[in-house]
Amino acid sequence: MLSTKNMKSGGGKKSPVISLGNQVFKINDVTFEQTPYDSDAYDIKLHVESKPVEGEFKGFLVDPKNENGPRYTGQVGRIRFSPYSYKNKTLPSGIEIKRDQEVLKAMAFLAEALDMRTQLDMIEAEDVFEFMKACRQIFKDNNIYINACVGGSEWQRTGEDYVNYNLFLPKLSKNGVPLEKLDVDNSRLIKYDADKHIIKKKNKPNNNPNGFANNKDIEDEFNIF
Image 1 (cartoon, rainbow, N blue to C red):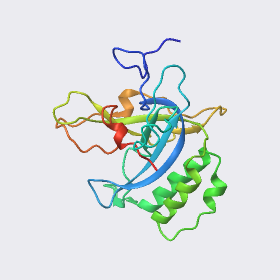
Image 2: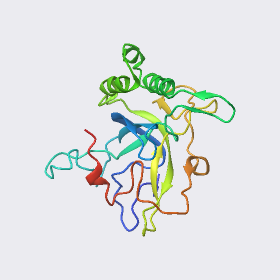
Image 3: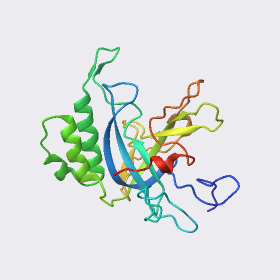
Image 4: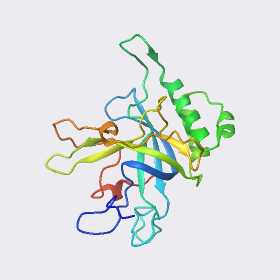
């Protein structure tokens, strides 16, 4: 099947960055990061890598400081576990959202997608930060590939015409799931739809992205360990 997916204009090489759409990847790391715009809000980020890319492909360096070191054999990216950050808040309806409980539910969902619920349930932590440190140890480098639907929010650097994407997983709902085991019966994986899974950028360009950008300056930033 012919496809221009992930093809750079003017050439046939595949991008080293994972893209929007329905993807298959493994998790190299999981981090819990304070957002740059709100000290009370946090993002869960999956540091992912696709299956090895065949043909002419040059992945990012595993260690950006070692130019002669190994490179990733697949496309990589950092994907927020949710379109929205985790934070204690009260919705207009009066419903209270508890950050820590939402984080636990997210990790339970991830563990079930990876068949690792037993390991997750063994974690006992004093707070959410210790809990996420423990999650990182069981989820990172597990070499288990899973299906995913990847959306993104647009952002643009001042003075540039190129639109970049901060990647995220669409919200879990009764209509489908953003992560799923490979080869499951009666798949409920969300089918990617650009109209639903891209958050359009605001008119004003910015220089403060919260996640992955494009190929131009990402390699220096991609140091996930």
